[in-house]
Each structure stands twice: as structure tokens, then as C-alpha cells.
Image 1 (cartoon, helix red, strand yellow):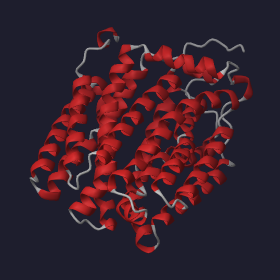
Image 2 (tube, helix red, strand yellow; image 1 turned 90 degrees about the horizontal axis):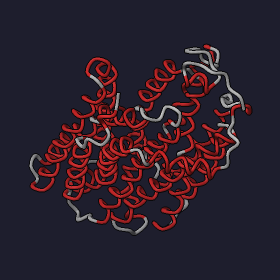
Image 3 (cartoon, one colour; image 1 turned 180 degrees about the vertical axis):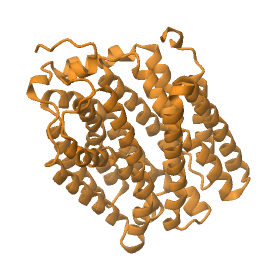
Image 4 (tube, helix red, strand yellow; image 1 turned 90 degrees about the vertical axis):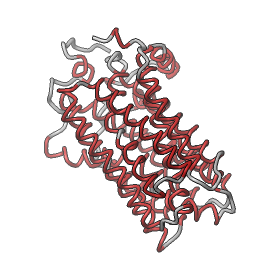
Length: 417
């Protein structure tokens, strides 16, 4: 396949003129909404059922630790699935793999709704996750297909802000469904959302024409992951982001029991306490977009890791000694979770800076490290559950300290221009 040379590698790779989208302006809003929905499947699949975890444990006659493993099972499927969908879409186009992923998501969600044991749900959560991850991975690829560099950055920023609605609404909606239906109804609702997304695909154009699809075998793409993983800069940034994500998923696994069972927060109000953190994350993301050009990505990244470490330590102390009661958990968690706006975007940007020609491979590898760390932390919350917030506190505390320690490592940073 022959491509025209261009001083701008991304438009050249996409076959686009600089800063000019392939799609008509009239279609922009429709495509924006569809891509936002696809990118939201990860958060909606985890956040909507969080208020139901205590009820689900009672109904399936399992302890809190085993039920919390359903989050780890989802993260395993979500992490491994990312490595597959990218290379497959480079060979087959974007729409067909997304459709296949949505079908898997629908099947997995229905399986969860019909599960009678935790073991059954663990298996179906993996199927659900492998399907769910196709949406976010390929939506990012479609943005790169459709837009030149500057426009794609603006489009991705818009998508991230819209995505913030999903984790904000998810627990609230899940709590309401639980109040008038059941935990099974939450998964049937996810089946319906998957079906709606499938219907929306008919309005989404194929963004990777046949002429631009790769013909290399999938094995060659997998070898590319090994090459990218040898770069110490990527590993340093990815490890720091991975520690931070470990704290996020400990929060997701531990707060339903800490808030609802230990501090007796009604499931319907859990969504409000959860949503406070999402508002903080969105605010920090917005602040990052306004400051990054003046202050610098690296400085904001380091600032975020310091605040995350301090918040994690404060949370661990509050959880251990009961300082402040529920407020003693909510406040440090707010500051920790809000640092998503400074840590994630800037660490990913730093990790991908060295790979302009392999940004997709590098992005998938970073994503696997982020979500893979969540598998361990969510499982730890379950394994160490003792009926108190202490496991939640010390796991997030260690995550914050690890995030800061790896951010301060001078791994290859001096070579950056």
C-alpha cells in the first residue's frame, strides 16, 4: 500500500488534509453522541450495579469478598480484550468489530441477569467485559480516522467531558432500578442499552476504508506490544497511572460496603456520594485543559501524584481510627479521585509522546496496565474484607504512595525534548 508523504504524520496516515474532518459538519453531533455512548460502556458496566452489591451478596448467598470479585472478573476481560480489538479492527475495519463486541456485551449482560451463583456471574462478567471494551478502544481509533491532529485532540477532550455523565448517572440509575425492580433488572437494563448502541451503529460510518487496512498477521501486531514495552519512559508513566487506577478500583469495590453496610447509607443515596467524586474528576480535567499549556503537563502530573498520595494516606488513617466517621472517608476520597484530571491525561500523554507512529499499540498497552492494576486492587479489597473500611483505606493509601513514587522515578525523562 502506497501513501503520500506529508509533513504531518497523522493526517498522512489517515489520508486527510490537515485539520479537515472526513465527515460533514451536519453529521458531527450525531457521530459525537454515538462515540460518547461507545466510550461510556466501561463505566456504565461497572458503576450501575455498585449500589446492588450488598443485595446481590444476600441473594446469591455469598460473602462480600466473593461478590467484589465480580468487579475483578470484569477488569480481567476488559484488560485482555483491549489487546485483541485494536489489531482486529486494523484488518477488518471499525464497525464490524464494534458490532461483534456489542453482541458479546448483550450476551454477557443477559448471562449476569440470569446467574444463580457467584461463579456463574464471574464467567458472564468476563464475557460482558470483552464485549464492552470494544466500544472505548475503537471509538478512540475512529476519532483518529476521522480527524486531523488538532481537531482529533479537541474531539477527544469533548468525548471525555461527555463520558463524565456516565459514571455520574450510573450509580444513581442503578439505585433507582434497585428500589423498584431488582439487581437483575440492572443487568437487563444493560442489555437494553447494548441493543440501543447496536441500533445506533447503523448511523455510524465506517471510518477505515479497505485501502488503509493492514494486511500484516495478528502475530506481528502482538510483537509490536513487546517492542513498545521495552521503552522505560512508557513504563514509568504507565506504572504511575496504574497505581492511581488501583486506588480507583479499590474505591469502586470497597465503597458500596463501606458506605451502605458500615455507615448505613441508603443505596439510593450512594449514587450521590459517588457522583461527588465524578464532579471533582470532571472539574480537574477541565482545569487541566486550561493550565496545561501554561504550566506544563509534567508539572501538573507531579502535582496530581502528590495530592493523591496525601489523600490516600489521610484516608488510610481515617479508615483505621474512625476519624470523622463517614465524612472522614468522603473528603479524602474526593481529593484522591479528583486527581484523575491531572494524573491520567498527563501520564498517558507522556507515555505516548515517544510513539507517534505506534500510538494505538502504546495506548492499548497503557490501558492494559491501568485496568490490570485494578484487577489486583479490587480483588484485594474482597480478599481482605473484614467488615470495616480499613482494607479500602490501606489499599488506596498504598496506591497513592506508589503513584507518587513511580512519578518521581527519573526513568528516561531526561531524554524527552
